[in-house]
Length: 381
Image (cartoon, rainbow, N blue to C red; front, side):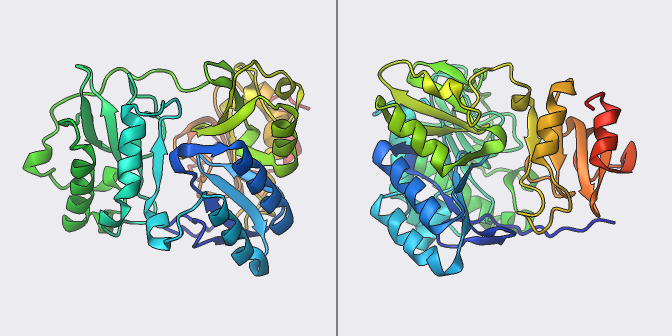
């Protein structure tokens, strides 16, 4: 039986995680936005001090891969110089904040996020994977992204605070949003939530002041690759881009002023004109019908020590032949996707198990397959 280790925490800049290709350093840019100078500075650091490979996570964070242990402190100093991380490691660990990517300066999402970041020291010590979503636009947009505590727009137009796993939220009065959010985080810890690990698994009754009475407004579609009101949205295959490709894009498109990160491995390039060169690059997806947008694959072996199989090359070859969602996972942990997929391949002892409508590690339909057998199964030879 395949085994894997559940870490129970996520890396950040001050607490990197060792992977098969070196240290993994996670960066959570404030408001999910990097200026042109910050993008170029981060890419230069990723090339000099790491492998030059950058991931965009499902929670719209960046991960610099392959950082050498002797280079980590230099990387930290560079990130501090560019204002991309907090100088206080405790505050940085608590800044697990997902922001609706289409915020505008001064709107509710921007205002609440800025206040929450200023008050991070008031939060309790939370389990490492617990996070927040500030989704206070005209309608919620982050419904598919993981978050334990959400501030969202309700159907009547006011804001609500909603705990993950609950369909209803608590109405919020203006200017009290962060007070209530911090209060619910403290209640979570005080009521034993640390043992549960995540809000959705914590079944303690909510406190009286946080009675859940109000549904969120109807969700709007998430950002798709292609033209966008802010410029253009680009999808990264499997959430990976090389520092070289990202530098080339920003330097070639002088109209790019900043880049925003969105769930589902999307980057929004802020620009005053329509961008054209990005659509000609294999590093970015601008076609919303691309089968790779329906495909999840972790980094796999050898970059991940827990993965026993290659994942992404197989996923690329297989994706056009799959109807529905495809997930190729290097092990049963399923880091790339938590929900079931129509077709799921799980690495086990150097071979693949095939399952349908399942998560990685589910009882397989076929077991012990190699890549050629899988491609033949779906007519992809």
